[in-house]
Each structure stands twice: as C-alpha cells, then as structure tokens.
Image 1: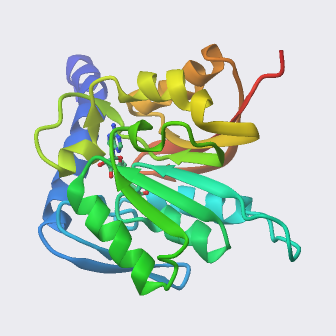
Image 2 (image 1 turned 135 degrees about the vertical axis):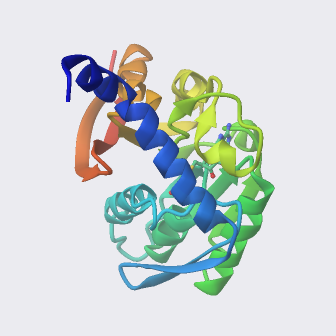
Length: 235
Ligand SMILES: C[S@@+](CC[C@H](N)C(=O)[O-])C[C@H]1O[C@@H](n2cnc3c(N)ncnc32)[C@H](O)[C@@H]1O
C-alpha cells in the first residue's frame, strides 16, 4: 500500500468503524432479541440499543452492579439514576442488587423496553422508568449514583435508534448539570470510547469540578472502552 493510501486508511479508520457499528446495530434493531448477560436474560426490542451485541452497555451494567454495596438490614437502599437506560440492562442489574432506580430515556421504545425487562425480573417496584431529556424528569431529586452510557458521536439524531449513537450537545449538557442531581458524597459512572466524542467526557467532567478515575477498561472493535467514575471535587 502506498504512503498516501496508508494515510487515507488511517484517517478514515474511525469513520469506517462507526459505519460498521451502525450497520451491525441496524440489522439487530429490526427484530426483538433475547440476550443473556452474566446469567440474566435481557429482551431488546426493535429500535433500542443492544448492550450485548454492542458489548459496551454490559460493561457499565457490571460495574454498576458491583458498585451497589450489600446492605445490612435497616439501611436505606442506594438511589440510582440510569440516564439513557435503553433496554434497562443497568437498571435491572442495579435493582437486582437492591438499589432503588429511576431510569430515563428520550426514546419511547426504550421506555417500553426497560419496563418490560424490569417486569421480567420482578423488580418493577424498584425501577421507575420515565421518559425525558437527561435530568428533566428528575428535577429536585437526588441520587447516590448517576450512570450514563452516552451516545458517542456528535450529530443530529433523526430516528429513535439514532439517539443511542449521536447527540448534538448531550455530553456537555450532562457534564454541566449532573452535579444538580447528585446526593452529597454521590458518584457518576459513565462509559467512554477512545474512537468517539465520548472520549472527551471525562475531561469535560474534570473541568466541571469532578475528580475522575478509570474503574474498568476493555478493548472493543479496535477502540478502548472505559468506565469512568467521577466524584465532586472537595473545595
Ligand atoms: C449507547 S445507548 C445506551 C443504552 C443503555 N444504557 C445500555 O447500556 O444498553 C444511549 C441511550 O441514551 C439515550 N439518550 C440519548 N440522548 C438522551 C437524552 N438527551 N436524554 C435521555 N436519554 C438519551 C438513547 O435513547 C439510548 O437509549
């Protein structure tokens, strides 16, 4: 391969990978899938992000599950806000560990899907699913953990499933306002990828006054996916 061809190939790599991921998702999103993650069955409806075929949502769900402490009797359950819940995989994993969850999404199909999975696992009394943009449906409430596996690319979504992949300013708005819904001592858990705009989210949270650290990492489709924990810096 010539030097020019190699340079073009390197430059187009991320674009091609994004197109491949969208194509893969497009095929899966036209039918209902029943996936399995660590022995937990998860139904994924058409037009909803699949955390198992895309692998990345599963990583956040596992970290979240492990972040929910085992409670001595009488202790209040931790409150989790699952932003962009999709099929509800993280919400269900956390509720199965005893967390009280509010799960929000803009996509109405995701709302239906998250309710369905909560019912399937008999945790619907611990998973309150609401439709809304970021924190609009939880104004005035506070959470011990806020989780978000965000859309990774900057763009204007035109279909429900596009919401899983692109947003115009969702990362910046999340970082600027997540502090308003955090309980004292609360933490944020987000997933980021090196080949996408979400890579900047940890830095954006740093500028917004959070201390950030990577708590889990994996290689998926040629990029590094990280789960980043962010806690408000003590002033
Ligand atoms: C990458 S998917 C992750 C879904 C799910 N957390 C999982 O792990 O499978 C991102 C989700 O965020 C939702 N979303 C995108 N923008 C949003 C916004 N502004 N407010 C609420 N949800 C949003 C999408 O509809 C999608 O379900």
